[in-house]
Length: 420
Image (cartoon, rainbow, N blue to C red; front, side):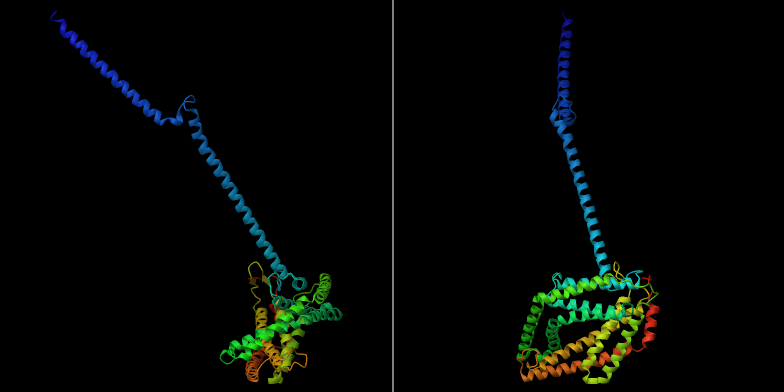
C-alpha cells in the first residue's frame, strides 16, 4: 500500500500535463484557422463567401476592358483627326497650286498662264459677287482691281498667241471693268496718302485744324464712293457677267506647244520696250512729268507681273526654282519701282484734289484754310521730287539692257523643272 501511492501521483500529474497540451494545441489550431480565414478571402471554395470571391475577380477585369476600349476609341479619334488635318493640308496645298500666280513644277508655260488667268478671274468674280469673306469693302475693291491688272498683263504677254482681235476684246473688257471700280479706289487713296503725308510731317501738319477737317471730309467722300460702288448692284452684275463670259473663253484657250518662252517672247519684248521708252519720256519731262510718270508706272507693273508669272514655285514648300534668281530679281526690282511710282501718282491725285475748286466735277470744295493748303502742297511737291529722283535711278538700272538682250537673258534663266 505504501508503494502504490507514488504511482497515482505520477499518473495524475501526467493527466494534468496531457490536458494542458491538448488545450495549447487547440488554441494554436484556432489561431491558424483565424489567420487562414483572413488571408484566403479570394481563395475560398465556392461554398464559402461565394459572391465576395467572384466580385473581386470581375471588378479588375471590367476596369481593364473599359480602359482598353477607351484607349482604342482615343486612338481612333487621334487617327481620324490626323487624317482630317492631312486632308485639310492637302486641300490647302491644292488651292494654293490652283491660285498661284507663278508656274508650278514642270508645268507647261501656256498651261500655267491659262490656269493663272482662270484663278484671277475667279478671284475677281468672287470679290464682286460678295464672296470676299471678312474683307472690308474698300479692300475688296482694291483686290479686285489688282486681279484685273494682273489679267491685263497676262493677256499682253500672250498677245501674239491670242491674235490682235482677241487681245483687243479681252483687254477692253478688263479695262472697262477697272474703270467702273476706280472711283471708290481713288477716294480711298486720297485718305491713305494724306495720312502718310501727315505722318512724315507730323510737326507741321498733325496739329492743324484745317488738316483735321480735310481728313474728315475725304473720309466721308471715301465712304460715300465705296457705298455707291458696293450698292450699285446693276453695275456689279454687269461686270461679273462680262468676266464670267471671259472665263468661258479662257477655258477654251488652246495654244501650240513651243519650247522655252517662245510663246511669250514677243509679248515680253513689247512690255520691256514700252517700259524703257516711257522711262526716257519721264526723265525728259523732269519736274512736270506727273502724267509721264503715271504712264510709265503702268508698264512697270506689267513687267513686274510678267516676271512673276515666269517664276516657278513649290506651293507646298514655298521655294523658288534654284536657278530663277535672274527672273526673281526682275520681279523684285520692278515691284520696288512700281511702289515708288505708285506713291508719286497718289500724291499727284491728292495735289489735284487740293487745287480743285469743286466747279469742275472733281468733288465738293474742300473746307481747308489757305495756310494748311499751302503747307500740304509744299510737302507734296517735296516728296514727289524725292520719289521721282529715286524712281528714275532705279528705272535706269532695270531698263539698262536692250529689249532683245533682256528677253534672251530671261529665256536663258527659264527652265521647266529645276527646283530648290
